[in-house]
Length: 189
Length: 156
Image (cartoon, rainbow over all chains, first blue to last red; front, side):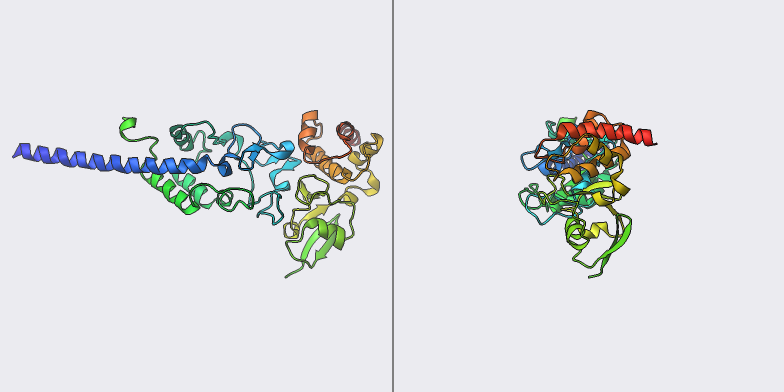
């Protein structure tokens, strides 16, 4: 009898563990799709390692030698919002726009070019590198920040990221709710 | 459509226009302030630069609505009698050739000096990289900004 209870208990524990592992693995798979958005030019052009943003789908250096500066909003006479308005301009080839147009501040560059998906994942959820954000604040940024939303309405001549914004947020939330894993369960053992 | 109120060169003005109208057209066509120039119309050349509160905005892409309740300064309002340090330095260094881009250059330089009183060459290049001069007066522009910084220091 004791043996039977032990066997059943072990089986239940294993099943629970497998369920947890499956959930994490699904979360990780969701993140791999999230990463395809994070590494799209609409994100990477401002999430740069240096002090100058990029522009266009090819990620060429931004015109006018603009700089990130201390607050991510440009140098005194070359603020981002000197040209970028709160909405896209109707004129072809004019600067795109969204509320509070900016780069990340130098303390939280969140630059992902050249990183593996695992490295992107780890840097994204590291409060030491992401501006002190917890997972819920990251979800808030990707779902509600209007400059993120602009990525899906970038104006003429600019491509949108591979997922719709809604799908992107759903996968991001799935990843966060699964414990924000940065790899498959077995590979992380 | 409600009229939009703004302060231009210290004077309260009203513009009863589509809020999406570029500020440049309001300044030039409605208020007759033609010192600010149209260059490219897409914020690429800097000829239309004016000060909106403290910033050197490109008025060709700035909608009138953004200026509501705010202070706009054009080249005409930069100083009494063209005595701003940047204007004086521009004269001393004989900067302009054709002169078309110069109002934008001067407005941008004035904003730079308001924030960086003693700029380096790199500061000047960064600040004015978005102001294009077809005559290529860049060397004189840079010299004049340094001179303006000295003049402003002497006047303080």
